[in-house]
Length: 281
Image 1 (cartoon, one colour):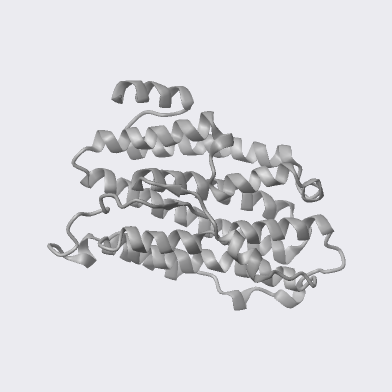
Image 2 (tube, one colour):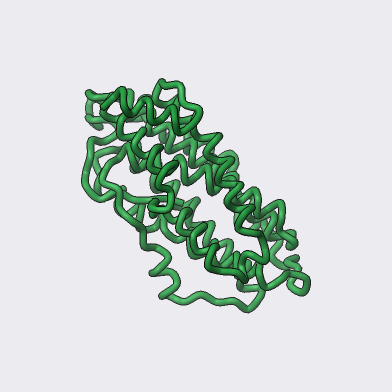
């Protein structure tokens, strides 16, 4: 799950020519990790799906997941355009896209067993995302989003009455956790290579404060997913909204110290974020 950026910013490293690409790139490590743990669509027992005992609410939930997971297509297109000179980041973005696009494919495949179909409008609308004009803001936002997606998928996997759906969402959760680590790694590299690291820290802190204090205005696809749930009582028969919200709340507790470590700051809650914002402004 992701959000794209529109206006070009400084690439993660500034000179893609004057150094050894293999030795200086994060991509090769992330690629090896992905190759080691990557799952295959053919390994999922689609023929074992328990059609008769799966409530309609879970089918509706699966459609919402498939729709939400379509956004990385447009996000990656924007990454490749805005950061074309950044060999490291754009190489990883293509691998990330491949893995992320398996998510809606898997959900649509599961839905197919129930006679559910999606059309081109579903896909086109699902690909739309909001724009963030800062690379650091994008990377930090996506750390939040990937950790939240991991948390939600783990919740869905544990609650699913249908074994194959439980297996699929568990696999998706693993992908999201790795992707959070990837975005974190590129944010760390951007900060380390920046001529103005405090400006990058300030940007990251603003994102953290925005997610905590004005979350209802965050237009990231995973947030929009949670908002749609509030208006879909037929989906909430699968998992109550309060459980989704509790899952999101636990996510914040994990992300504060994680991003604090990234920024070299002690952060355990939104009050810490606010104090650091005042100091750096």
